[in-house]
Image 1: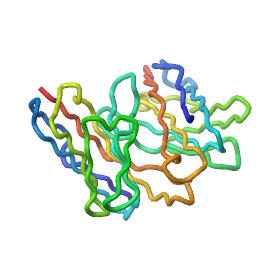
Image 2 (image 1 turned 135 degrees about the horizontal axis):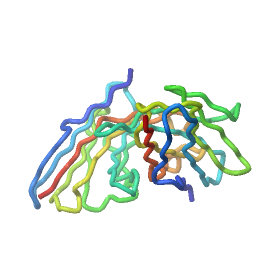
Image 3 (image 1 turned 120 degrees about the horizontal axis):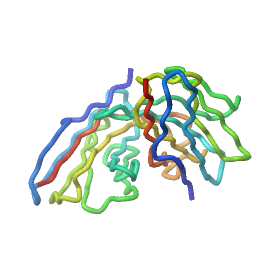
Length: 116
Length: 116
């Protein structure tokens, strides 16, 4: 089975701290994604990556950055956490190549981040 | 632009009754449609997808969905609801085209509550 893991299930940080959220997948997927989930807003794409050292902005990249140094690992970075970044963060991966798009995404369990 | 609408924030059903969770979509090309379920404090789990072929798609846990091209809908259904089906359900669409335009677009989610 595909497995996507996230480094923390729950995280509490203070305003201004630098926060790292780690995601690892074990299926050699090319594509990885970071979403945030907020009530009434569904899932919103923050950043995604199609390959190592490659990244593209999603719909809401402001206040975030990402790093993909290895194929299996995709990190989300909050350079200076703010209270409006309190949310559930979901990582996902999929094996989709650029030529086909019939696959599905596989999700990690999520990290619930609280910024005080 | 691609979009997905889930018109109901919440659906309430009695156990044993049929359930329907609605989803409509808008894409420029052929739609690839997905349903995911999320249990409390968990990531999203894939339920089923429509790519091509039969309009009625069967998935996990007894769920099925019907693709209706003329109504641009992909409603999720189950003949007999269980209390354990209570969860948050997300519909997603991907335009049938690779590259960055092929990312999943999610609806805002519908909370399904099944009462005994």
